[in-house]
Length: 522
Image (cartoon, helix red, strand yellow):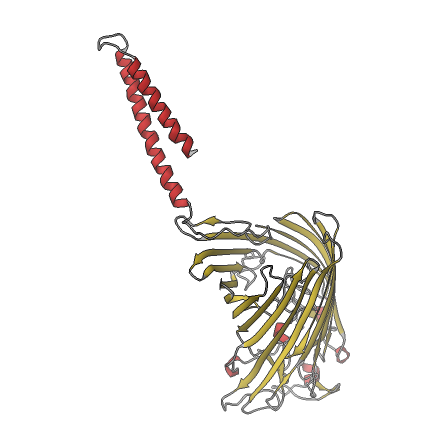
C-alpha cells in the first residue's frame, strides 16, 4: 500500500504537469480562472498525500522490530497460551499475551467431594458446610447431606511472556495469574475471586529462575483429566520458586536433564493434636536452612516419553529452647530428618497416528507428602511430631494408570479412563497419633472431551473416589484407644467429632461426582 501511494502520487503529479503545459491560454481566455482553481486544488491534495506518506513511513519504522529481533514463538494453539505475538514498537522484543476462561459445573451425589473445580480430598469436620468441601466422616451431619450443585469460573487465567535477544542468548520473562485463590465474594455477593500468582520466572540459556512447576513434576506424560489439579495417583503440580538448569544432550532434545534447588517448607504434623483443632504446623518454630534438591531426566521419541525424577529434602523443628505445648508434651523441641523419593512414568502411543496411548507412573518415598497430588498437612503430611518432640517421616506412595483414546484422526473427540491410588503409612507407633489423617485415597475417572479447534474444549466426566481414615475421631495407637484427654479435659474418644460413632475408625468415606467443564482461550 505504501509503494502504491508513493508511485500513485508521482503519476498524479506528472499528469497535472502535462495537462498544465499542454494548455496555452491567454489570461483573458474563457475558463482560465476555473483551470487555475483546479490546479490549486490538485496542489493542495498533493501536499496532503505527501504528508500522509511521511506519517505512514514513520509508523512503519516504529512498528518494525530492530535488526536481530527475537522471533515470535508459536505454541501450536495450546489453550490458555497465546498462539502468536507481536513486536513492541521500536525494540527487539517479541511479546505474547494469552487468556483462558473456564467454567466448571459439578454435582456431588453424596457427602461432598469438593466444590466445582476444586479437588478437596480431605476430611470434613462435623458441620454441614465448612466452606472447603471434602469428604464427610461417617456418622456426622455432614455425611447425611446429599446432592450438592456448584459452579465456578475461578480458574480463568491470564498469561504473558516476552522474548528479547541479548548478548548471552534469548531472554524470556513469563508471568501467569489465575483467580482460584482466596474468594473475594460468594454466590450472594457477586462470585468475586482475587488474583493468584501461578508463575513468574525468566529463562536464559539453560537457566530458569523464579516460580514455576517443581522439577519433580512431569506434565507432558500426565493424563487428560477434568480435575484442575490432576487425578489421584501422581505427584502434585506444585509451583515453587527455584533455580533450575536444563541440559539438552542433543539438538532434537530427545535426552534432557534438569537439576534444581527449590524453596523449602517444613510440612510436619503435630501428631498428638486432634485434627481440625487449630493450625497443625507452627511456622515460627520451623528451621529451613538448606534448599530442596531435585533432578529429572526425560527421554522423548516418536513412540512417547519416559521420565525419572528424584528429590532430597530436610524437615526440621527448633523452638530455640522455648516450650512447645502440645497434648502430652510440654518443653523444647529440636529435631531434623532427611527425606526423599522417586517419581517415574511413561506415555506410550499404540498407533502411528497417536490415536491411542497408555500412561503409567509410580511415585513414592519418605517425607514427600508436600509433593503428592493429594497433599496438605491435614491430609498427607511429610512428617509427624511425636509426644517426645521428635519428627518421624511418613511413608507415601502412589500409582496411576490411564488409557487415552482419540475417536477421530483429527483428534477432535477423545475419552480417558484414569485409575489412581495414594497410600500413606505411619510407622514407629505413630498410627492414629495423626488424628483424622487419611490412610488411602482411590479414584476412577471416565471423561469425554470435544475440541473442534485449538481454542475451545468441553465435556463431561464421572468421578468415583474413596478414602480410608486412620482413626478419624480417637487418639489411637496400634489399633487401641488411648483414653487420653484433650486440653479441656474432655475424653478424646467421644469429644472430638459430634455425631461420629466409635465404629467409624478405619471406615471408608466415599463420593460420586458428575462434572462438566468448558474451556476457551488462546
